[in-house]
Image (tube, rainbow, N blue to C red):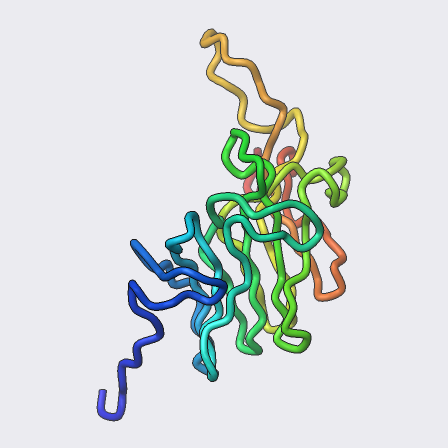
Length: 203
């Protein structure tokens, strides 16, 4: 359309905030009405980082090998996409060291505030209580954040109602399942739906 302009945010080989360069690929996550862009990318120092591109440049929010707010060290990758609201707040999930299967166990959920310009923990695995289910064990892909700063994320919990192995395979049940949770801007977490809840329409 007339007046529309493509503007480069970063190229492979460009210097990445925090050191090294961007390599391999970019994983765009969010674009808001102010022109802010949240994305993940591989970095030459190893692993991945989560970044926010905005007026004035690119800011690093988390990177493999860096300290994670709330404790621990970021592992080899984030669980994208990175979510962004119109105010410039970001939500992202990132694996923590040391990685252990199944995928998502020992992953945390984090919030970047445009007001404080700081990253804080929303859910720390094995530390943060899960409503009615002990402690969170990890997180899954695809967190989201709205303009009220509510974050919705898939949380891994201990439950006897998770996905059970096919009978007669001899594979043990690992005792985990995934629910959907909402964390408000004050950090209060509530469940949206968890394994064992009644499903609309039956079951």
